[in-house]
Image (cartoon, rainbow over all chains, first blue to last red; front, side):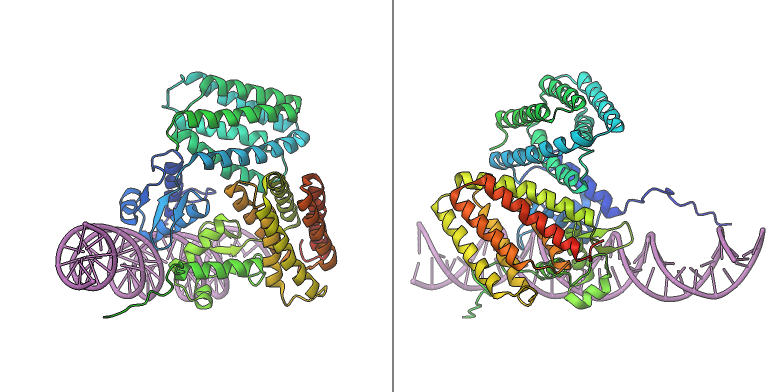
Length: 228
Length: 228
DNA sequence: TCAATGGGTATTTTTGAAAATATCATATAT
DNA sequence: ATATATGATATTTTCAAAAATACCCATTGA
């Protein structure tokens, strides 16, 4: 009689904490919670609708991802930014992504190529639509950029390497977003080159492009002067 | 006139949660909490003397370090082990440590050399005292091994790289410890070679040794048959 | 025999409040 | 005037119990 329909059969029902976690994490990466900002439990409680203990779970999690810092008994704050940190992040991203690219190029099959082409197509379409300082679709752009780079290395054969790359990529992205620097044309051109070299399976050339891609992003972000 | 002496002036007073965190983390790495083992909150409460909420903070933290897995609404368990995962960890450690070694060799000063020699001396002394299957001082050995490798890369110039390496190193160590495979002589010899090449600033030779060091550790751990 | 249903127990998740600690402004002494 | 103590307030940390969910096992119906 009582036909209790399970909320979403098959899908994972996101717990309250999980939802708030995603939102806070996203707000940090997109700069809605500014670097260095103090995170007071009571305020967060109102803003994200979760209780103190739940918030603490989330903040501890983010602390071990280095997106917030937890200082002794003095609470939490959004991880600060610095030019030195940005360069360390860029270097590490380069190290991981270059290596993963090499592995991926060596063992990607036709299905992988298909996914690469598809991801690039989506990214390209969005990049075309975005004027140089139109930040209205920045969230979509983030996702497609993320997906393209992730797909490129998806045949590297190591779950761990992919996760490590994803972690560092998000940190890199935060810098791009706090500096709000969209390098439209240049970035799009480098994405096209990455696609070409991927299909040629030329890891050396792809790595060269990647170096320019990331170094360029760093310089552009630093040039805005928002990061000291 | 109440002269309240502050507990430990200058030192950080470790909060209850922090202490329990360290202990649980250590127990996972040293295999006292077995891979795959379910972590029930009530049991942990008795064992580590912290309340449920505090435990949850800790487990969430460990989950984002991938030392425990948190499945939906089905609680926590110690991260399982697998041969595939071990090899991924070893590869990533090799990638990070080789790169860091190169940087470190290029810019280490005399003070760095002193720390390298000192760390190797301590490690060597302990390795000499340990017979091949004497596991009594395994905790000390872990610490000295960790310190030697960490000191070698300490002049790499990137805090982030050092932290990433420390993370992956601990995961690698867990495998060595669950397999309880101490490769005394071989390992000691490789450590000596690493020291020599460090003082020669020969990153290429040091990397070769490191490859043998880590690949050997993987094979040895797999050969015990405890990891499937 | 097997799958589905239902209810009781165990476990996890979330909450709000108590205890501990830090922060800040004010007063006091050197 | 500077520095140290004092107390009031704000914030963090810890706890234990309520709510939500999963798990287990007996019962029913095909």
